Image 1 (cartoon, rainbow, N blue to C red):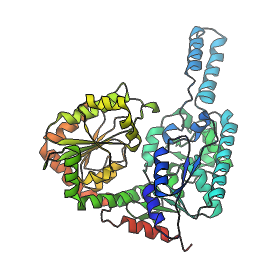
Image 2 (cartoon, one colour):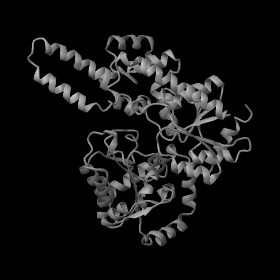
Image 3 (spheres, helix red, strand yellow):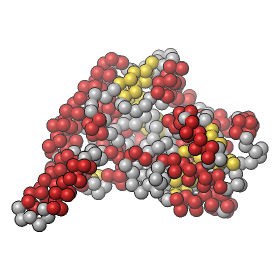
Image 4 (tube, rainbow, N blue to C red):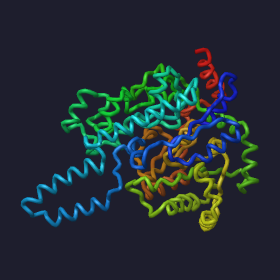
Length: 476
């Protein structure tokens, strides 16, 4: 969002102000605000740690609270009395109540708790708008039921225009894949059947977006959405970065007239990189020791997400995963390899133990600048779930997508220049094909070049289009 703020700062009628809310470490963003002289507000959500999980993102909508010890004790009791004529049926009832009411917070007994939580978030959103009094509110994404959704609802009440500049976008089908089959989201209970009839917008393919114990409070408070599966649709205007993004949104039910294709401000960085190609390559040779005339592979190392309770992760820990990525790509000697760290990982370079680990891996080349400077110059790009993949596609750079965290997000599955690897084995095979199979790689690059214009606008004019979009609000 800092790029958007830089555009707003140059429009006389606007002064950008940032809102940082939640328990995330925003130290990097706050330092950027201080250096640019932008105002910012830090808001700590007034909910307990267990409550805060209730309104988190899609993948955590029905995550269990950590009651493992209690659950294990209950299992042991059930095993001890599995043949008892009286205790056996009683314990089954207790087990069912525990799983639905305590573990997954999906029982009707959680209605008061969720009602209190959502009421509190709504009050906080209204207080924030009263204190800041914005003329326009810009969102990176919107989720019904969390603070972004409450802020958007409060904006509507105040008739404050809202603009979505998507940081990322999730297709409905990907949300469905993450949620389908979870018992708490089933539509086949008595309460589920009532909600299906009374509030059908919450249902898609026999699956609720949230458990009924959350849906009803949101409806009672009138802070729901007519499209909870695609809450981004609630914004007044969506600044789509590409035709592909606008098409995806339209496919998922967002009115086409809401989407204005501005391009992304990062696309202007790609355009500038292509113009400065020779000087950038000389800089890489001087700073990283790249060999003149030799192509390089660019790899975006993902941040640590091993604490998210993921299944199917093939490594014992995060660093073992990083070691596998680095060793696999560095083993080939045909091309140089440059690794880029996620912004939230860059502080790790200051830690001596992390430096020592990198040295033990052969001291790989780490680029600490903006990855968009290198993307259009690279031979191919290696990454997992990241918005930079879209920048690689619109730069006609083939992508080796390694779903290392087993998120099964298939946003790029129909993009011919993206190769999917879902395991160590297929990642190794992918690297071998990208490096050694020239006919395969040539076909991949040609296919990527054909669809690249649909995935981005690299004409150096995205900033002008974004400025024009926001200037339209100054006359409102």
